[in-house]
Length: 282
Image (cartoon, rainbow, N blue to C red; front, side, top):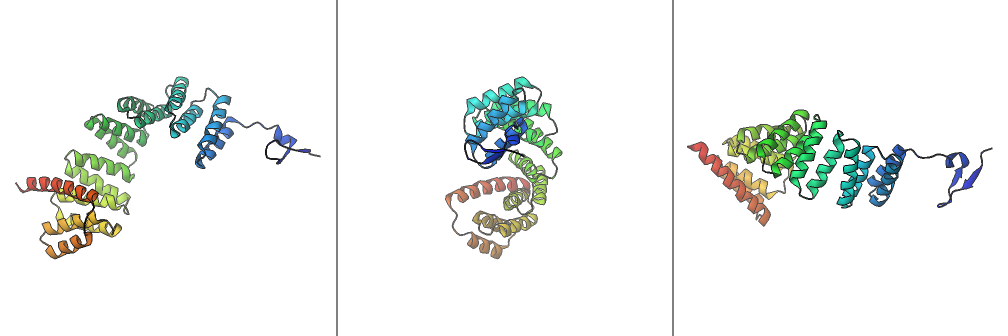
């Protein structure tokens, strides 16, 4: 007959057979993941440390512990775990990516570029790694190289609306309006309920002098986010440009008085559109 006894701590009955079971490193790490999902970072770190202690040469366990330290803002301990993980397995991409994320958090963009580039080198099919490398390159004023990484991210994840949006946004900021329109259109196709993507596409269509198309897209943006006064103003601007004064007046009224934030954004967009539109009229 199986014998039972009280375990120390919570008084729960455990069998003698159960008491002999030692958790594997994977099981300990899974418990850490559960605690992390619950928001108990202290308990998660404790479990991850136990997993590392029982499997010290496993870079995944050290990376997971480093990520937890990073979440609680303990950069030096996170750095130590990532460095140890890389020392154990220098060609594994994930520790390099996590180290890049840590450098990014502290504004060390050049160091982040180095680690993201290594992560890309060891796992070239990971779209996220390319995207993060692109962001870091952009912060280092290497826009052409950043653009290449955004393009690669899109190639690897063709239906990801966010990657298309960021590539379109990059083209827009570099003055490549037609390229921006292509990727912003794809962003709206893959995320048809995103009003912001629709608004940005409408702005680029206005920059290209395609007011009829811009009106259609901005109508969608307004329908998706009826309480956004900025969107009403942009739609009114597009109507006004086409000589549809009554429609313009209606949407200016719908917009009402813009707050300071929306007003600044509206002025920036208007200057950008007018500059592009004037160039098209020459």
